[in-house]
Image (tube, rainbow, N blue to C red; front, top):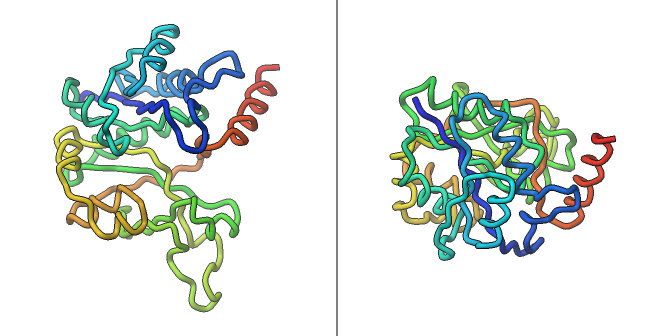
Length: 247
């Protein structure tokens, strides 16, 4: 079963414009992510999907295959789907372009979710929280899953609500969602044809479209997780970690 990893790399970012081409480490941010994804064992290829000639040129510098996509896409999923149409692959793994420290093993875990099951078109990752304050943070998405690992719901609010604790209870009772996905190619193309549902519009979480339309999302719990780069401050922290590791 052929697996391809696709990295959406939109140049314009509201909170950190041009972040995928930030280069204070000597490498582009997108290059770090690409090289980490390349270390995964299951995907036969890693492809960058962009809307920018600047990103295309940068990828050419470090030898990555990069595909130009429409600038009109509303989401990374739509961008990936455009690329997927031209790929000879059964499974597409979505690796976010702003995750330069992603564990390659997590990419393989995503792929195995769909390789090892036949009743689900989409998979994603969850992890434990480090501290209670993160559970209350609306920028960190929470997930609730059933006994078999299928997602029940995703929310920016603390879920489940701990009645006895008046909201957030013991940290071990919560899971955070990691924004990486695996799709069967045909299901990925189907998602782009689904209309936005009310829950997606309220929470601003695209994966809710799948649940609202009655489909399953299988999750895997992983131990290693890192936050993506959303701000210049987070990038500065990454640069510091990278330089310390390189000494």
